[in-house]
Image (cartoon, rainbow, N blue to C red; front, side, top):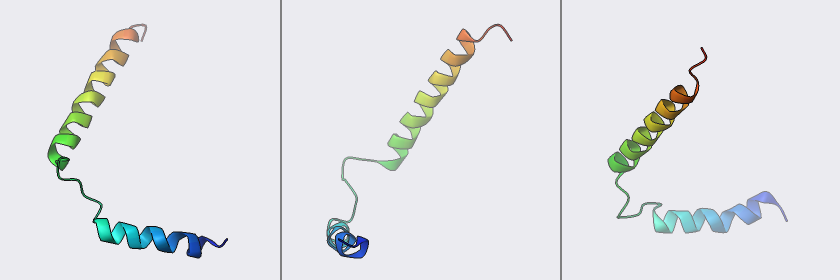
Amino acid sequence: MMLTSAAAPLISLAAEEGGHHDSLNPAVTGGAAFIILLLLLWITTRFNRDR
């Protein structure tokens, strides 16, 4: 099976659906990811006090 023959149905399906979900707001998703990354950075720096 060639890659192009396998990808063609997936491309047409993606074009139909649009790839967007109504409940996912990009600003909220990005803001939540930013807060989580800042929290992980803070936790990492608390455990790395030997420097």
